[in-house]
Image 1 (cartoon, rainbow over the protein chains, first blue to last red):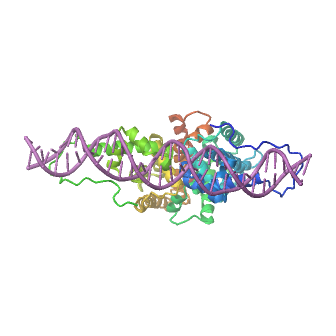
Image 2: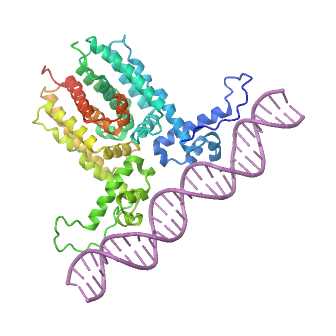
Image 3: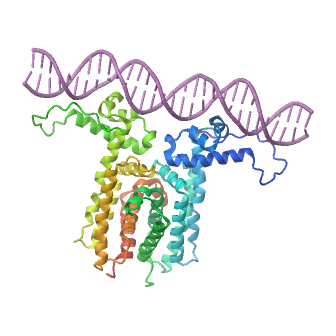
Length: 224
Length: 224
DNA sequence: TCATAAGTTGACACCTCGGTCAGGTTTTGA
DNA sequence: TCAAAACCTGACCGAGGTGTCAACTTATGA
């Protein structure tokens, strides 16, 4: 709603250069706040999160949090915007000149890795989408679309070249995405299904193998 | 937390029988409240939902809602418990004597159908899991486990009989589940990926075909 | 050295929300 | 017909949450 999400200082002209490791107060505190916010938001959701808890977790008094961010919503938006970045890294595995099996397997594994290592972020993102994605900016969504389009084009190319059987690339990526997301976002359910208390790296390994085997087995053009 | 979730009336002995279509006041109002609750909870989450809105949507004053339910949490629990029921219907397609292709295809289509027709419930469930599944009772989770176990055993049977290639049945079901869930729970994302504003039945049809083709193509034992 | 900008903070205003309650009306069943 | 149970509800309360503010301290740069 608000135009200026972050309260800007009166912009003293940045005349002198700075030592790299002398982190500016503003940068440090914003980082602290955002980091705490990711954790708390992902655990309790937007409405369930009191600013006081973000403040506590970041070691700052509440009023100081409001010195750096205009509102709770501004913090949330900043966090969401930050999530989008790391999002498409896995897709870099999908390169036209790569062979489909290696590329797709690389994607699946990278995606699972990301989901596993960044479970909080992943859940927060999922929860934002489930709630209707109202805090994702048009630009964020466009970016995700662009990245998807590019990957889809490459898969279509493989299909055209006879390297893959006919397949709807968009639905294919949805499958891969949802399957990989699942292990992080719905961990309790996944753990139940696998008869364990918590998922370990072994389960992620099994997941990768099953996904790759079944999906690739289904679309890889007669290589066997 | 509370033992008695729902405020019970002083249990007048049910001595006379009733006309079937003369719905009792209590039953009707509880139904109204639960229905409204599903909608609102799924849109705003537990913390984001004010009881006043459930009241409004169900046409009852807030105090009346509290006449039927002890607390907000009680309403939420009741809703969640209700969700579990419809959950495993799709799995009835997985029967030992069925042939794998028909069975799995039936499952995928039924699951997509459910997700599509009951998007609110589906999202609410997903959001509950993402938040850590703290309101799912042990019994609910056990039930889901049991149902899963049964389906897994059947798939394992097919594998043993040589009807399917070697596959980790538990991960397989996770794949199918997550893929089918995705279209309902993450609709905005799915729509973006498919370059449309909203998903239609055609997209669900494409989804079913893609899932079935790729997954079954990957695990069906040399039938082609 | 010193004026000014940036950063810090406890206290507080204000509002929303979960939940209660007293006292009413309607249903029920004998 | 009538008493008791079930049902209904406006008004209210207290806890907890967002966001503000005025006064203070620290950093900056000429």
